[in-house]
Image 1 (cartoon, rainbow, N blue to C red):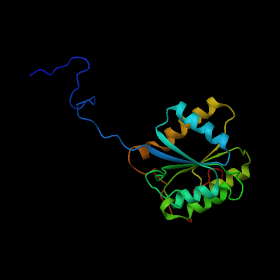
Image 2: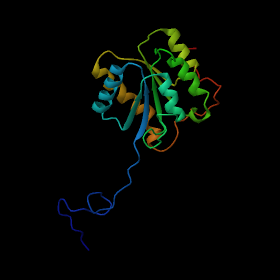
Image 3: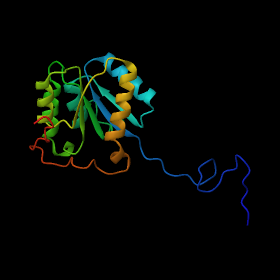
Image 4: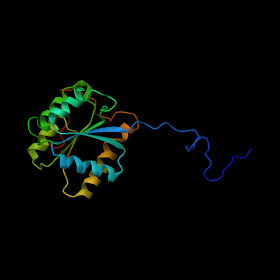
Length: 186
């Protein structure tokens, strides 16, 4: 028996209206912590231009990051503020620094396996060493040009999100909250 193969005719298993549809996984959530609203907007635009396959949630500082990750007000609606699969973290923020947030996150058992990528304006080796010692998985200096930021988003997405998109954890991330990650500079 020959199938109807006219262009535009839905075929079972091929999507289209009336065909069998594959379930689309929920978009991966990435939490971006940065007190600079300009940097947050630039990152949002770079994510869009890069065609990155994740939903970006930005919070404006340490207090908001801890509230989001704790599920405290105003971040109590889990469907609106889903668990992030990756955290992008600025270091230089007032009140609660990125270092403080990094240390807090790594002490929470429910966040031990979530990768943290530092996006900082700091080139200082002491900041880089400290971030890795506190549990950062990767460290990037914020690029100066927009196209470089788009490329960084693509790289972060391709390195850190494939395992998450496949429904598994990033290998090597499960560790005790008190054990720092290996520092690649030592």
